[in-house]
Image (cartoon, rainbow, N blue to C red; front, side):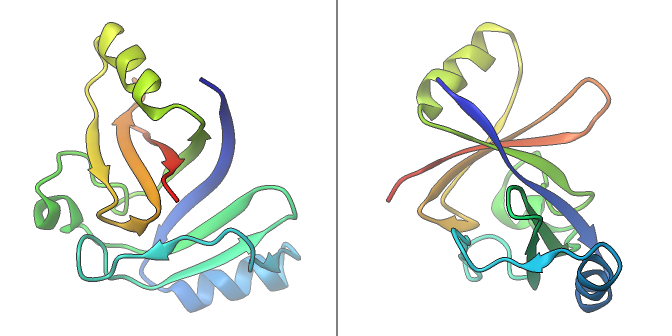
Length: 135
């Protein structure tokens, strides 16, 4: 079970302003590769801008404090943002979390088509995503 840092998600009330800031001030580029296909009718319907330093993506997502309620999930990854890792064996990682006593929300493909996502909290309440490509 391999984990690699995939993206950092920042939640905002102004996606356009954040997108401009990260491109104009930090010099990040608009990301066009390996972008998620948002499932706007199943889980999260907000706007997202994608930028990258060439290695790690940043997802600048419209804040949605109700996304957890809408999907019946305890962990809401678009209220405060999250750090995301990609794995090659999500089932093994879920078993690892269960063995360690870490609870998680299994979003499946509710938010992104082709990505099975789970979300959980670190000890300070930071949301962590681990996902695996399904297609």
